[in-house]
Length: 520
Image (cartoon, rainbow, N blue to C red; front, side):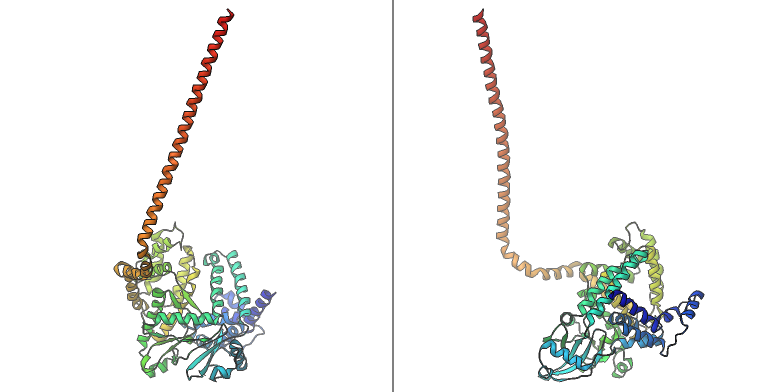
């Protein structure tokens, strides 16, 4: 019943805000336009289409809000009025009441607010789909940000995920393309990350790890967590002061080098992905600021660490080889990698896949982002993947989403940014570090603590091994000797019984002959 009621709510919201009309408006065929006119009968909307879409996503809950956040970064795919309206979903979702927020903080720590903070701003500074943030001051005068989880989020997300799982089953059952896209595995991946985001202690731990990883890079700042004031529903962190990256005019006025900022964003992304395998996977403009403080001028400020992506060493190596092959326009290598990894059937012809990938990617090299239609690229790639039965890898869904965010940010900052030229030197340097003498040294240093424990034990371990081997050889020889003795015993027994039988036979024959002689 909860599934049916949630589905009805979604359908009613689509009908109420006219999202069906918005979708049909982009289809130019006559039958779709006739259907659009028919469905508009008796319905009128006062708000513009962008406002209606934003309100519908807000009404439907956090999963749909996150979908809108991703769309808001892709202004090349959406009309300007729609993308500008969806940008409000990044940090201007309607907040829940301040009194409820205070109550949640006090309940989380079991103390009155006046004992925890010298001051607490009732008005939230940012409100998103999962939580909202208040500024406060600790008793020792340090300025902090207090993040409070929205109440009732778990039930809403569980209902939506149940609906998505059911839809995924239907898609796999009735669509060949659906089975190839692995919707159930993608939903399971999304489920895991969303539930992780509902545990703010996990978010605090993610922030701490990312802060350590980025410490020596000098390009991005991550707030420090106050661990004595962290709980699953509320976390308190260092207050970061910066200008939202979406405020281009303010950044220009402050003297920020926008082109360098765009290049730094690409460097940060590839460093997190390929060096660390641990990356910020929610990089929409609402979570990114730029510092104007003199000592950290021009650095990124990262916020909101509820969604973090991770990659294995195998994933990193495979992706890096693919990227480098793309940058070098080695489409044959791309085809070979896809076949070797099992992403396409093993019987796929390398030359056919190579030709298809070349036709999709070659027109887009050496061009700035403003001249690239990602919508067309994605459509062509989808058509190609369908032709060759390419399987979507669920573990890389977050990476794909983050790459869209990064490209969207790059387009906003510097439309002339050449993403390929910016990323290629970094990836080539990274690959050089993975092979040869530098990689050997790094691996040796990584294993040094284990070697330090094993080396002093080597004489004893070697002695035990040799002793065990000798014992094993002695046991084998003993077993062989026993087998030989048993065989000899059987032979001797046979000879003895044969001799006894022969002697008895001779004796009986002699007695028989003697008896016959006496009878005669």
